[in-house]
Length: 397
Ligand SMILES: C[S@@+](CC[C@H](N)C(=O)[O-])C[C@H]1O[C@@H](n2cnc3c(N)ncnc32)[C@H](O)[C@@H]1O
Image (cartoon, rainbow, N blue to C red; front, side):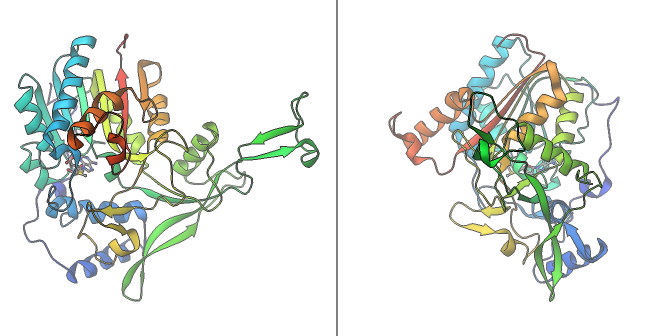
């Protein structure tokens, strides 16, 4: 791997772990100051980035993964199942056994994997200086990898990285979503000659977006109407693009639904395309695929924190900034749509609803974990997990 040409330096502040970590209520004052510096209101993704990744943020300076919350990466069987799959993939696709893990937390996956598969060459990048140190990796953001163009061949892997990319909170309106109308009800529409009815997927539009602002000395989530151009398109290019995605994929977003989604997904895909010469990208996370197959979307997908027992709402998390994790359900459908658009012909993309990877990795993993029969193990899964797999310049599957 070439580490010199084309290397993009990281901003200085996140390379320097801040040793003095303030606690509440000082943290509230610091966040209020941040919000005031943003003009009195921060778009939610800006708040989330500050909460998690400012030098005093949760991931930069505080996270104790395994104590604060648990992940699959902590369980040795996960690395064994994933490692076996990656070993077979490398052999089948004639890939060098190189693994680039992004967002590896405190390095459990790396340690468990190398214990069982010591032949993998392993590189670890994490945005958190604290966690990068714990996993003996380097500090780097997935949207700015310190690698030269086309310098990596192998597997790019992550577990629970996508749900930490700062997200936008979008509230929709879709008065006519997903309904069937009779011919006489819609004289304005051309019907198929043979049919007296037709299905209208509707045209979901973002109505409002979530911001964090100061209210009576505390922080509160506020929804603000979005701006539109005279032709009706959203003024914000990301919102315009997300609306295009929903319409192209005939999404059934209903009036009043909320979706949390990260606009960093595009930057991340472009960065992986830049550095990856040939190989596989395999990301696991929690989230949803459209409305269907296995991982349904809830109507209010707001950011949250889950410690294994309690689900904490975003309104409560922002009362004590920087203190706990802040995450969101990943829109895998959008990730897949974006990967298809960024990688184009050079990649084969699959996500959540295609159960191939899920069956090979997740199911044996859960079966082992709960020692139940192949037919009942799903009953034990706490939440449905999803995956995104992108094969880049691999001819045969
Ligand atoms: C939920 S933790 C998961 C850690 C580990 N993969 C596991 O499963 O235990 C998310 C990890 O992603 C890292 N991370 C979040 N955003 C990142 C980014 N933009 N670039 C690189 N790492 C990031 C965090 O610092 C943290 O280590």
